[in-house]
Amino acid sequence: MTADLQDTIAFLNLLLECERAGAKALRHFQTLAPAPRLAEALPALVGDEARYCAGLTQQITRLGGTPSRATGEFLETIRAAEDWPKRLDLLIRGQRWVAKRIAEKLPTYDDAELVDFLTEMHATHLVNVAAAEELAAT
Image (cartoon, rainbow, N blue to C red; front, side, top):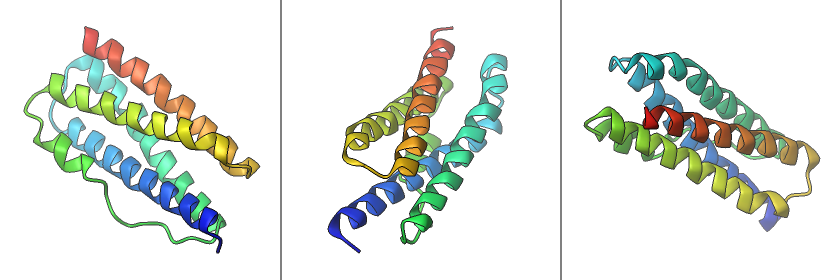
């Protein structure tokens, strides 16, 4: 395995750990009786995070890597947040962070399947940031 491929797999595993943390955090949010508009939005966000966990696992495996089983530190940070405005702010920051990292790495990849997957993931995270910012403003 080349150094570039190892770097790619390491990056995808980092994203996988982040997505896993996001999915678990969002499921945790659902148990905390959020405001009605937020409660309506959470299932779609959970679905996005879970879908990207599965997709990242598939990409890592396809490239010959081993998917991480770890969960990112973000989960504990977000669970420790004491109220909804803080939780929502952390969610927005986490989604932005993932989108930014993908945008930085995308131009370095020439694997069409990976580029397509990451392009979709990036776009979805930007949509989710906008949706969460709208919820935060209300």
